[in-house]
Amino acid sequence: MDAIDRLVFTFFNADVAARYWQDIVRGMGVTALLGLAVVAAGLALGLALAVLRSMAPRGVRIAIEIFADVMRALPPLVIIIVLFFAFPSIGISMSSFTATWLALTLILAAYAEESIWAGLNALPSGQREAARSTGMSTWQALRHVALPQALRMAVPPLTNRAISITKSTALGSVVALNEILNNAQSATSHAGNPTPLTLGALAYLVIFIPVVFVARLMESRQRWMK
Amino acid sequence: MDALLHNFFNLDIYGQVLPYLLQGLWATVWLSLLVIPAGLVAGLGVALLSTQARSRGVRIAVAVYVDFFRAFPPLVLLIFIYYGAPFIGIDLPKLAAVMIGFVLNNASYYGEVFRAGIDSIPKGQMEAASSTGMTRWQALRYIVIPQATRNVMPDLVGNSIEVVKLTTLASVVALPELLRVSRDAQALLYNPSPIVLAAMLYLVLLWPLVRLVAVLERRSRVAR
Figure 1 (cartoon, rainbow over the protein chains, first blue to last red):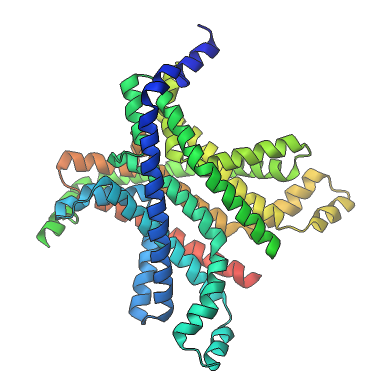
Figure 2: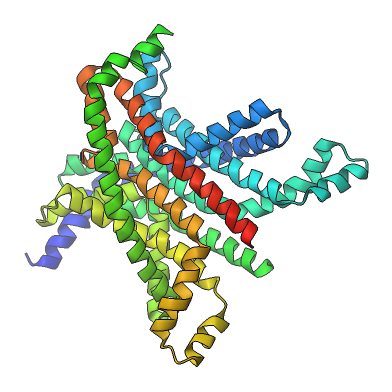
């Protein structure tokens, strides 16, 4: 067997692929579901925290700031492992899906809060004063004047962040979540052949290349609008 | 409350494992000091290729490279390299697998940051430099790259924090960095306190850097 044949037999083995492709497809479902759940909950929580930080008393503001700092400083894998392996010993057990989802959601929320709050902060205070002087309430001025502009400023940094955090769903494999990577690894050890890993790698590209492509389109539109 | 103190903040266990965890922390710092400069150099190379290459083919190849690694989870890359290599008869040491994975992945991220920096320098500067007799390389070396680097400093530091956080992935291939050491200690002592202590050590290491990025970002916003 020459080198090319051996490479094909090892990484692109049709027999092995035929036996295990369904595992990978099932993993894709879990990865996609988890990614969507993280993005939805993370952005919503981040928005809520940013709004709260712009209105709440000092103590709450500082608490939010500390939350955002801690979540941005800790490695995601450490948070997942603490939730999954350490929390059960104080009586809080959760599934590997919940642990991964919760960890990534809190992290995305921290970055979203920081980006949206930076956007709110960058607006001249005259804008909100002007809105208030037209008879809008504080809440209305925030909701209709400040937030729409802040959100637009927060979009470019947040798309990149959201992509890299959804890619981190692969970390769920460390706590045996049955997503793509975990399924690919166990299929590889069953088969004694790394073709499932190749399939898993392709599966990630199938999911994330379109996402990266859309992000690029948004970036170039944003640049063009400036 | 007792359960919390016993399982999360167990001082006896902290005292017992701290020396090992500090060794793990050193390994994390060393690993970061290896992969961050390598990623910076490779990223600058990627950015120069994507902005300066005369051949369209090269520029497209670089764009494909960058997007590929934006879409590809680093853990999958590491596992692919580490568990795939033996199948084709290559016995890759853990550190080598980690280094290859990190450089491939980081070159793409740092590359995007440097590219944004180079794009932020007006074309006229390059033209002015060459009108004084500088070669293209000299103009890049002395005029464009220093300013580009300064303009994207917050993003460079921010990305480096991400790289330090990514070193935890090396625990998956049993490289004894901080996370790995703490998990081994947890398994040995049947108590999760070592993981909690490791989390605190990561905070001590990274919180100042997160603050530094905030300061740099504010300064660059003010400078504009």
